[in-house]
Length: 524
Image 1 (tube, rainbow, N blue to C red):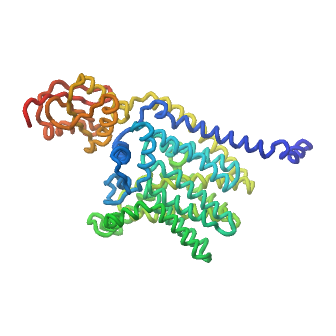
Image 2 (image 1 turned 90 degrees about the vertical axis):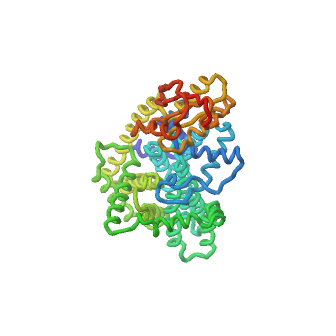
Image 3 (image 1 turned 180 degrees about the horizontal axis):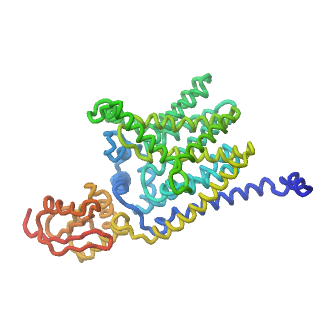
């Protein structure tokens, strides 16, 4: 008994603030280090996914860096196939890639490093947010859950426009929380909250839209009696963040507004009926459930709906007991966010994709951390035990899966999907040509040959100082990516588009690519 009393009275002497801070930073450094393992296969192997989206983005970056053509827009939403036309993400994804493009002379590996960096920064920002919200240990648990979240692990492994949004979502959360700590909300924090919420449109417009609207509605509720300058500051952040879109809209006849208007009100196949709404919202609700379950490591053999319901009931129980103040206001904000997101996305008449809900991964993680925190606050031992056991099991599960995945993916050649298969195919063609001029035509199932066009330009120029043209004359090669769902489809391309040329040989490479050499003696 005396020992316990002594430890209690002398805790601060034994563990000084400086010592606790060192331990704290050691733990967070360890978490970031351990999170490297499941995320580092591509960084260490240098063999990474380079498909349609990566090729498209790198051609756009080449236009910025090499051709000096700046842009006010990023990629089209859904690559033009989501039902919207003339609606674009922001351009900053391209400009961030352009920095690494310039440093590594166009090597797409720079994008892999950038994406990996996004993941590390996201984990650290999660720690800062959790710490500011609920204290030191909450920050550590928040960063840990982000580090082992399956979708957020994948966000660190390959280049895609959505993946950079995680940083700016958390920055918006952080400055919103910081603004709630103040008796009088500082204009700086108000501005930064709206700016970072809007800035995420550069990576995923489907995330930025509900996030921005939720920030607006939340602050209207919080600062409704405040001076007008605060509302001006709030909207100034959004205006600056969306400035590239605003300038583009003015210069090009408001294509985004027209595209959204056409999608909602004009397109015939989007005619809305009561049955359509019912089925559509049912599908959307199913994706929201999947989004929640996918946030955490699966510790159950099946998707446990009972666990999901219980999770939210416990959260609501603690939320209702929470006294009014900074914490309750922030919790109200993150409760509002999934509701507003569902409302906004309900206007999409058809499938929505899980990456539209990227911001909700952090909402559910914060819900979990708050439940764990409250279980200790109110001394509910059953909830404490369940929360601790779940966390430990998730960490163990993540460690095992991460190890298995790392060793598999590190050695995985990747077939036609990864960069090594494409480079090996190019080396094969260039070496067969023996330094003589040749032409090269590519078949790809998505029709657009973005990744091949980029790799031919970058790798062919860098290593062989020669970029072949796409003409069917003299010696030309066919570089064929076989469609796994329709393995015969390339034959139709050869019979209708290619037609001519004497076939010298055809060879299938270990990657699965088919290379065919032809010689055209006669003019086409």
